[in-house]
Image 1 (cartoon, one colour):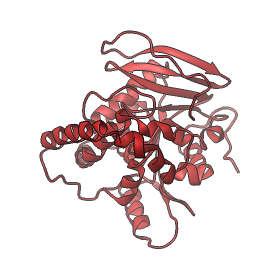
Image 2: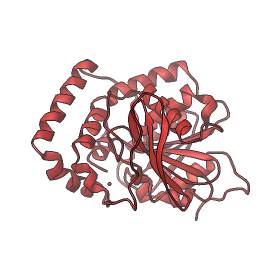
Image 3: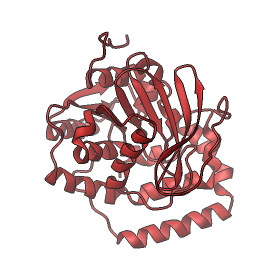
Length: 318
């Protein structure tokens, strides 16, 4: 994994959502809406997928786009982008298990599971109809590309925002061994109180947010650690999907790369990714890895240009 993904793993965080949605309903494996709180153009609440409450926010109106945040990050990391998209798009954000406000992760993640999670969340909030623009940042770029390949009929476009790139993905130890060791390590770290002691401060160093307090939770640390140690598995799984399943015909693909100055090596890798996917290539500069925070207008432009045009025609923010 690149240093960008490791940096993103350090963090994520609005202490007090206006009114925090309440999780209700029983377990079970079926997805279903539990409780939603409405506020203006936003619906916020939880859906239950695979027995795990998933925090979801739906904002705006128009064609649907779903935003996926990077390793260890939360729905709030897209906050600067949402107001730019909401007049033209129905924007869906959700937290993967263990992250943000979602319930504990029950199993280690896979690319296929994350692609299926996107489908089930969209269905649960009543947006299972028209194809969507899938937008993935960092690690979630893997998830969104897997979604596009596995569910082409659900995909209107794909936007990869400084996505993770692994030209030769590999893992050094068997997955089962790594998963078991990570669970044990997570338990040990959490019994020491380390997450509460340093988690919020680490998140603030990465990118200040009023939600930094979430990183004092052992739930978030365990989930982020598991995403980290299974990163190579996810990359290998996506590489296998690329060999078997094409991207949906006619769906535009955009690679948006961050550039903060200095070495252009990362830009070169992103450009090669765009070439491999037959995608348009854009650069957000100056920008760090959290492009949605550093250059939200660039992200919005890429999303609006890479999806269906509503009536009246959408225009890009200035």
